[in-house]
Length: 258
Image 1 (tube, rainbow, N blue to C red):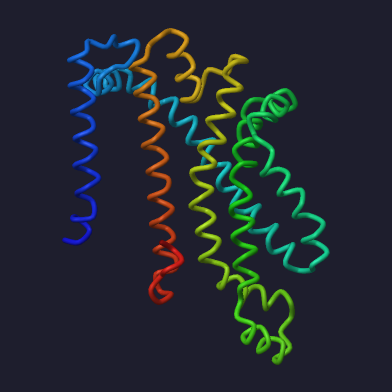
Image 2: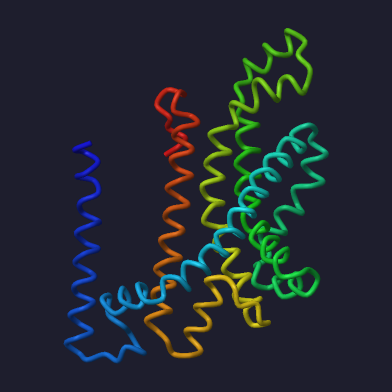
């Protein structure tokens, strides 16, 4: 515990120092609040607008979590399907790579035209979050100990038994690593989709509040929303990290979960 406190001390000191320097600089140079507000004004704005911002954050988080769950299920399922045969991997993997390589901001307007707002936002976030789970799970399935695989073949285990009792446990640390990456990407996908949908009048999520504050030059509210989004991303990463450590804590040193 003492070591953990020492590890956290430097970034906390740097963060507090940066906030103090920011506040002092803004006051010393008399920077207008519509150009760069100070931390105290941002905190005051957040306190005043908390009901509005937190309500919008819940909408964004709902989209993020739904997309993350669907990405976890879809990515794991696709990885297991592709691992059944080499021709399945060669047939399906290029489409997953194309979806990952295509910027979601470029296809989001089309998705929003084709689907209603709720489904479109979830689909955009899902596209961004899918590939890390898929790629990491496939890597985990392929990294199964060949000697154990031969042992299962020696005992005439069926393909589904090998996957369920050997390959799936071996792939679990890789799957959880991909899930941690996808958590932040799902939030990014949801925000990008909300930016695009916001221009069409979908005034719901936190990303739209950022656009709205920018249009009205309410820069302190804009910064408060950005801080809230950053905190949400940190919490998602921390929760998924804790889930990873809990799930594979019994696997020796738990190195893959770091």
